[in-house]
Picture 1 (cartoon, helix red, strand yellow):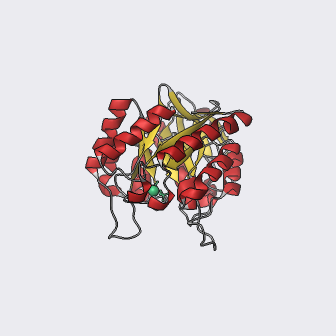
Picture 2 (cartoon, helix red, strand yellow; picture 1 turned 90 degrees about the vertical axis):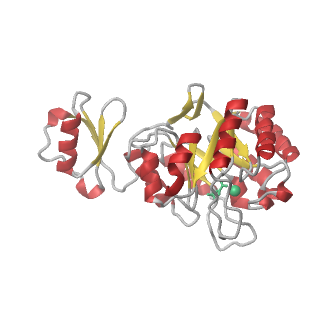
Length: 333
Ligand code: PEP
Ligand code: MN
């Protein structure tokens, strides 16, 4: 159950009611919002004068649900940059899998500027499958990303791998990425709920849509309303591609949730050869954004070498996406 308290209700009253009905609560800028589990769907004993409106749910997709907010939320990155809402934009986010050196990330930043891409992505803390693989540049990588942001006027997104460096990521990035492997990490989710920065939450590759959106509920119920969902492929019986991009799941999320959805065909496919076709298919679905890995020289990339587009491939992809976005009433930015 979601309960909007009367805007006049005080913090003390919100706390008292929350204790009484066993709710989480936060202030959404206009009023206190209380959220209970489906087993606690009762307002018995609460002064009706303190309640503005309430919504009942039969499962724990609540704050993210279209029956609570009947439109896609506007996730504000800065005064002039928004994901979702009614912008009609499909936002391209690109950059390498990992920050590897200043020279490498600078060439990537320059590609963004050249192509009109507003957000640069790269990991500094990589959640690798093997402990012997490159683990990322850490804080030095974050500082390089921040340097590119300042030098080129870009926004940056980078991932938090675990709770040990969550404060550093929050400090240096514009958008916090919670990766597929970190989607279930309660420490990360709870900290990012109060970080005051937008979060891009990737779907765990073994997660159902219900589990995925419930992870988003941790962020939303902690008071962070700026959450973007990212489908990046799930594990199926298929082994010829790295994962399987769940476009049916994307259709479900667009229909049933109020969160912007972006797609990451790079990690789903695992091979550069399929990324452009998938990106075009995703764009035709009218999604709110795309995340594409690109690298000045993918052959020598320290992580995800097989799937990153080189820069000529990225330029060709961008040129092909503009008319597709236009055909579905959108603008690729
Ligand atoms: C990434 O974006 O580089 C990444 C590690 O993605 P995922 O969490 O989806 O595997
Ligand atoms: Mn990667």
